[in-house]
Image (cartoon, rainbow, N blue to C red; front, side):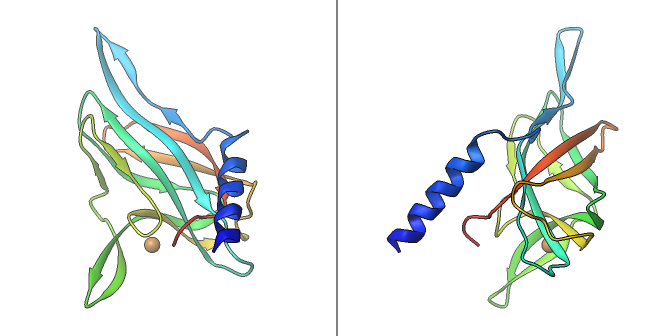
Length: 157
Ligand SMILES: [Cu+2]
């Protein structure tokens, strides 16, 4: 128990320094009003050898107006989509969100292990800690964001 807690702390400390562009924003100020989407703490979880699927996470905040994450794309996998998790019959199941991920204005929407996530299917190669996953996020407003998501060992589930 104690050892794993120490390893976890070390992993978090490592992840905290020298991160690539895991944050980005589309916000623009026009006539004194700021509108757009901010993405912070974007990352992908390292996968074991042979894994064909992976998951990425981030925190979104729509500024000035509601928005919606409608598409994600990456060259690291055949497909990328936003998945929701829900418990049904005592089992956690995930499902695509055909309408996209709603981003209410001014509220943090956090994707995290065990909850809503960006699912990568058909990985071109395993995601190794220290690598980066390029990703383009498209929002209903027509704005897009390009990010480089650092790959980290995942804590928790
Ligand atoms: Cu999924």
